[in-house]
Length: 388
Image (tube, rainbow, N blue to C red):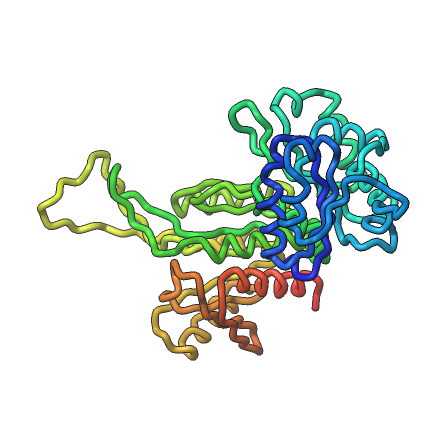
């Protein structure tokens, strides 16, 4: 979502500056154009030639009569966004105090005055990050609308965020705010039901589609809660769950908490649970399991929240489009959903997918990657919330 975006990349004197080459490559891989600005301290850590190679553009290392800061970050300047990565405690403090004594801080002052979006990825030792003055400076700069990409706290250091997290926040700063801060709750992946302390019943769902939807909703300005049995991600508040009952409880809590504006139910939630044995069931003998149906999450939430917009996903194994549409329409009407995304279960775990967007009076096909499916779902949802 960075295609054609002009990123001015400010580099300051953190040891994390050694990662700038890969960061610049990642931004360019996602379609951005990149031009770099370096502080004197940054030049002592990474040679400007390396940064020039990574960006395929000359690097600004001093402000001259060409007024590089205005050409880059002024009101009619080249940049769509000014990204400072890495940003030292010194640089953050100077920006908060409107001190511009390096090319990077001068560009920051110019960008803030010209209403150019600014994204900052701090990197320093953890005690520096925890200094009250640094925290106050971050709060002050954030109050001006600057986005901070939270560092990773590891080994006593506030390490610079991953290239993916930084690129996502740059995309968020330069993408239309379709969700305008709305709270989106998304379920994703599979749930698991225990048979005994070792074995479970689950599905083949990978969670790729749910995570893709969550990423794009975040980029479009939503506050995202992702409920799944999966990794922590930089673009959402993650609630870890394992069973269908835990997922239902978590959805209830997050919908009622602030409250939520919409639920996107992507997860392949277990339809059945079993009696959980206290000890491992011994192998080598015939076994019969008594399965008990679980409550349907979207039906339960609809009963409790009659006016909440809900998007459903429906996986079928028939391989027949008419049957998929019929099953999706039954769910659509029964639960009063905004729309249903129907697909054949054979795409579970794969990178590519084919789906049908089913509404009361229309069916639209999508075929391609799950990442782009996430974009399509988010845009359909944003249109729904806007009443389009």
